[in-house]
Length: 104
Picture 1: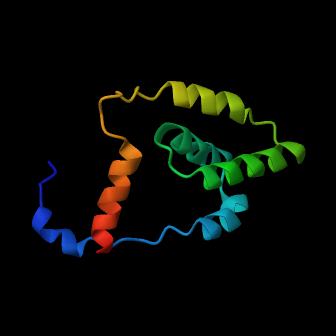
Picture 2: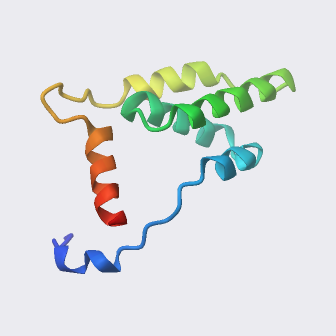
């Protein structure tokens, strides 16, 4: 059971999200991880720049002979996600507000 422990938020350590570093390391990621990043962007509006870089990496791999059907995988996994209700606040905005609160 997860306990609600709001009093210890000061112990929460934020990690840096360095898009440039992640993009530099994309060739090391497996094809599923690259696809999952793209799916996160489509579903949550996570990070368009990173998703675009992943698509470019997948394209390079295809040209180099990789036969994994990433388009089909992305569509299948994306369609399998639950629909986000329109009356729920924008998750991307809500997450950014929470992250901003920790930076103060």
